[in-house]
Image 1 (cartoon, rainbow, N blue to C red):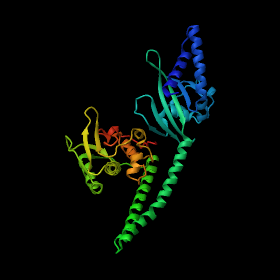
Image 2: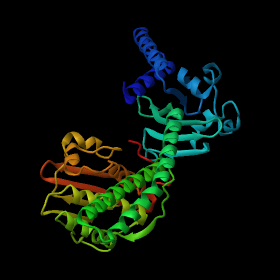
Image 3: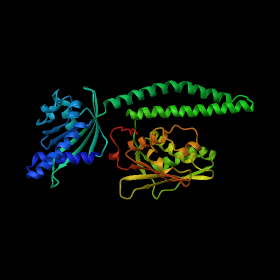
Image 4: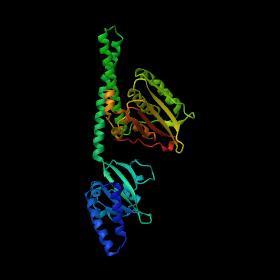
Amino acid sequence: MGFLAIAGGIVAAAFFIKFNQKSKEWNRLQKEKNRLDSIIASMSDGIIIYDQNFEIKLFSGAAETIFNLPAKEVIGKKLVPDSARDPKFGVLAKVIFQSLAPLVIRQSPEGIYPQIVDISFGEPHLELKVITERIKDEKGEVTGFLKIVQDRTREVDLLKSKSEFITVAAHQLRTPLSAAIWAYESLQKESLNDSAKDLAATGLAASKNLLKIVEDLLNISKIEEGRFGYNFQKTDLVSFLQNLLDQVVPVAKEYNVKIYMEPPAESPLEAEIDAEKFGLAISNLLENAIKYNVPNGQAVVSLNRQPDAPFLQVNIADTGLGIPPEAMDKLFSKFFRAENALTKETTGSGLGLYIVKNIINRHGGQVWAESEIGRGSVFHFTLPTDPRLIPQREISVNK
């Protein structure tokens, strides 16, 4: 059962508590309430309903487990901000009054419902996802609020453990790989026969590819832990993108692909970016546009201002293989590569677009793609021109 269906049913149950109805309607609502009580009791997510005076009206069994509080001590209790200091009700009060919580990361725009936030507690150790929806009466007036609380502590701890393992392993691999690259580069400077030169070139290419995967894994660990680190500065995107294109020209020549930028209608076009992280995202997109293209193909970058929103839009179009329709939903997932991409380029980790999505989202933008098999792809992304639209904290897209 979907969130809106459950929320709608719970609202109906709340109205049942408030209003006396005729006997027939009363019986119908009583049956509906019993049915919903059974659904709520079976849910692993905690359900909390409170009115505009912050008096708790419903506290499900799962909520009892998450907050370590019996419902009989909570239902009917009116919470106030000072309740956050109460050792018994402190965590619950901070979920209700979220500005008092130690760490809150918003996953939805402020003021838009349902509100979705991640809340972290140190003592007791809890990682919660909280979804808040308004309860309205038949006139559309807000009479209370519904919260669905998901306990993600075990999931987050497992992710952190995995991330720590990847970080340690990647750091251990980086040093010997760097040494191997140095050795192969030194060998190429020596007087070697053709067979030895080919072996040195193959070893160098394989070592560099593996080092790139290691660097991608390290970047993902930092992204998912919220410590990738960003330093935003106002930058002219026109010159910034042109510089990046100049850097990938040698790769484009190697693949026999023409790459250029269409001059924008106005210049300069400025946005707040982290040059290093943003450059990493664009380089990934440009390299994909080149490597998954066809001989004598082209890749074109364009930039324009969105007419009705405070955003710039960048488009990277290629004449390459295209992306199968069934692959579009997974395109920005970790380790995913479409089947036709695997045939074209056997090397690759499937991490690049996942990193791109996280970097663009951290800049306050969105990224998406359009494609047609055999005709090429266009990757679009937006960047806000209003710095207030840039998220205040790092938020990873764990997909």
